Amino acid sequence: MTYISAELRQLVRERANGCCEYCRMPDDDAFRSHEIDHIEAEKHGGMTIEVNLCFCCWICNRHKGTDLTSRDPETRQVTLLYHPRKNLWSDHFRLDGARIEGLTPVGRVTVKLLQMNKSTRVKEREILISLNRFPL
Image (cartoon, rainbow, N blue to C red):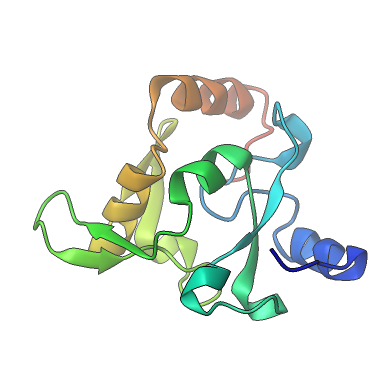
């Protein structure tokens, strides 16, 4: 993996307001520190440049891995995952209580692949929402 400078890491974190760009979990409230993710993995030709990097929690990062697509659970069509630099979060997702609902094929495949609504993750969001610590 390519070295990412401290300055670039800080820029990516600040751009994300300290929250995972996939599930919106705040870094300050996470069990483990968030990571810098290559949206398009280096093995797929993704470069270590600002527009190909995002700030994400370790859970989302582990589930995403190097994947770029998955099958939409409704249509079974191969669909691109959510891309934090090209897509607007609110176009593809919304909160339904503490669950993240995929509004589009992109949203649905991302929610499913990243396991955003696993019971432990929903419980964390419920707690953070009750404390006004989850960004809406």
